[in-house]
Amino acid sequence: MTSHATRTHPRTPPYSVHGHLPLHVYLADRSLRAVLSACLISLACTCGALVIVHLVFGVDFSGPLPLIAVACAVCLFTLMISFHRIMQSSKRLAQPLEQLAKEAGIIAQGTFDVRIDDSYKDLGVNEVTDLIDSFNAMAKALASMDHMQRDFTSSVSHEFKTPIAAITGICELVGDPKLPESERCEYLDLIHEQAVRLSKLCDSVLAISRLDAQDAVTHRQACDIDEQIRRDVIMLSERWAHRDIALDLDLQAPAIETDPDLAHQIWINLIDNAYKYTPDGGTVGIATRAVPGGVQAVVRDTGRGMTADEAAHAFDRFYQANRSHAEEGTGLGLSIVKRICELLGGCISCESKPGAGTTMTVFLPNA
Image: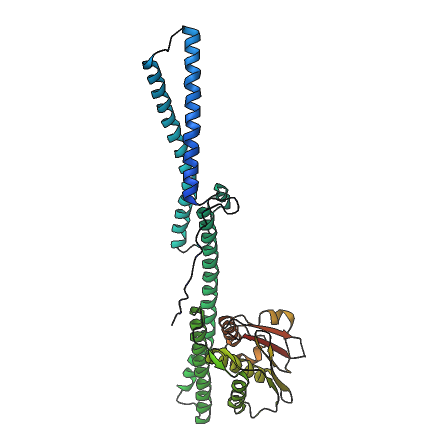
């Protein structure tokens, strides 16, 4: 279920911010400037015209009627000039809004590489500047999400295609009536393995989709991280009992306020990965300790390690540095762990060197 966090928006201050004005102040300022300048211009033009007419034609403007005519002329010129200037100012203010409507229509059609020109910020209006920044940020986020969705869909399609193709090919062989029973059983085992892989892939895809849709963690309670890790180690020990791998535990973390179910998924993925990539005779080390603001957990293995480039992509979806273990995983485990850490307000980092194993460090805050 998608969690909707309440968002609050700061109110626009009544005065200028960084030299900008609120929209209502901007409109009042431009209107007042237009009227005042129009009055001055019309008054100056009318007076100048009267002086010229008097000097050239000797017309006498004394008396009430000429004064009324002059006043009317000044008012008429003032209205005309004010209207023209307000129209110019309104047209300039409408330009970014027209551009915004045009670009919004393009986005509605599925094209997200549009942006509003920052030159419109020169208007000096708070609302226009905020609108441009918000629109450009939204377009950028939509473009990023669209790219991620396309990449995710492509990767999912590829990952599903491989086991489905294997199952299809093996089923054709199993259908051969001349196939020996021993080989038929072997092929059925292969079909079962690929079906299990598909099931795991579906579970992982659903898990990462749910985590992507979630934007807040509302369920938090006291959680004993050390006890969680002990139980997860016991749960996974049966799976890896056939391997000659030593376990080094150093658990010293206090209980914290967090989501126990999400934290549990972190330890399961990291510990299972450490066992998977540790060769026989190697060691899996797990250590926890209290740090300012929360706890830190370190899970390390003594496997083949990764190059700097491989480590940089360790949390990418469907990425598997060691393809020899591709049949054992989906390439989504570390992506799920990273997303959970982000939801819990923590973080995870990866340190690895070829031949020196890999160390995963997790920080979880005490909410």
